[in-house]
Image (tube, helix red, strand yellow):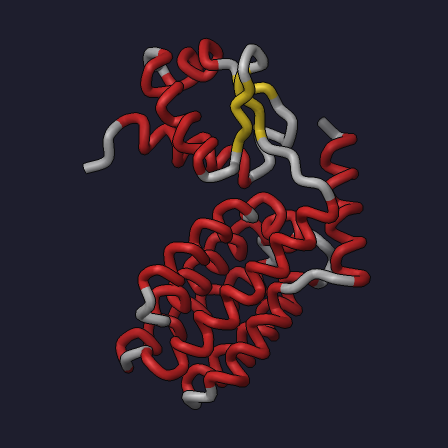
Length: 219
């Protein structure tokens, strides 16, 4: 059973991922304790956990704030994420059991339903499960853990990317190619499809930065 600080960490992380707490937002322990109806101790422990994940920054005498990422850092992080996903996809195509492939297809169908509903936030959650199943399907615990850690660090930006016009539709189409490659046991194609699915460059990067600026201006 999760302890209170772990569940608080997840709740605060979710608020950051969903844009309720913006990059640079100061995290006041007293305010958070009042909001969640707890003492400051589990809040402080939760913030320390989030800081260890790179999701928030804790600075002496300045307290905690939601981490900010420069455009250059964002590109670099997505580049690494693309390679993690490619490795996971290559291994998953070789190692996934029939049951795991069925679970992946089920997650893919859930993504389709979310895509057709036009709900980018619902698609965001279904998309997370889809990718987590590929990480697990690699059957490489170290790689899966590293991929999941960076995935969590990039959650707010992956969500914003899905709000760009037609991105959900394109994302689902890319999933189609990934699933087909994995089921066919074609590790190199799965790696290629996942790398292209994750990497941001050109227009996609410009759209993401524009979304970040628009959201920042609205807060």
